[in-house]
Length: 132
Image 1 (cartoon, rainbow, N blue to C red):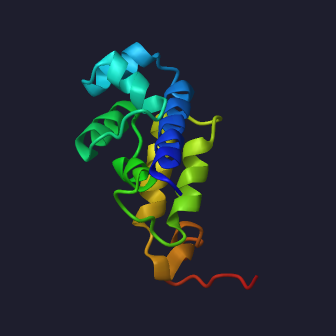
Image 2 (cartoon, rainbow, N blue to C red; image 1 turned 180 degrees about the vertical axis):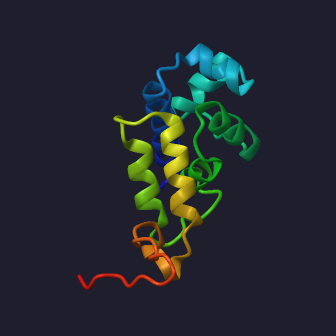
């Protein structure tokens, strides 16, 4: 993928996240501490933001900076992780805070024990679990 296409896709993703968060361009630029015209250029794929700028935008959007780094080509996606995280981030039915909590819970689960989030609790001492 060419760098121009990647920048347009990154900018589109940032714009989509801003709209989902119901923030104006001006408000996001204020929260991120960058100029309104510069943010507009990033969203249109005309500028390549630094890691520091991406971090500021991520913080203002309340999304993972890692997500923006991967989309910008600064980091490589973790195997199997990005699809789930991207799905959570794209969900328009939950709040930004709920998205962050879900991502934190997902990432806290060891890969070798992915069932940890869904495993039933252990029975109290002295009781046996009923067979399924």
